[in-house]
Length: 115
Image 1 (tube, rainbow, N blue to C red):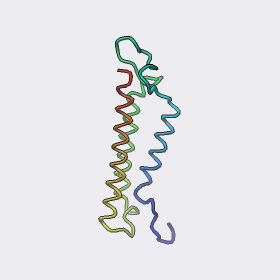
Image 2: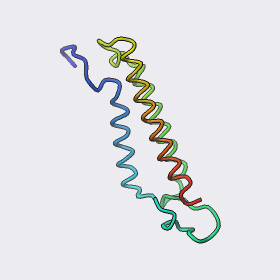
Image 3: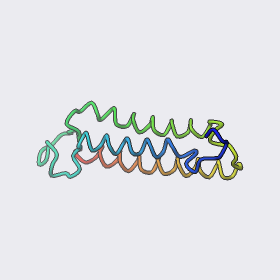
């Protein structure tokens, strides 16, 4: 942005890059998505959707960090460059709402599938 033009993705970078990183993380971790695939299927007790149960704590923290980075990006001066207040607010609300809804859907799916 040396020439001072505004970026079309200004204020949305954390949302897009973070969302892509979370999808790649889920592909790498390969969590259980169906109840029939759970280690405790047909039995009592709680099991983790991940092969390493520590991700039951780390995954929500990753999602919370993603939301925090989106909010921090909205506070950067470069996000507001050459934009009006309504446009900045709309971009920030849309980015945060999209991340919040997708985080809740992902977390709730993975947190209850094997419990």
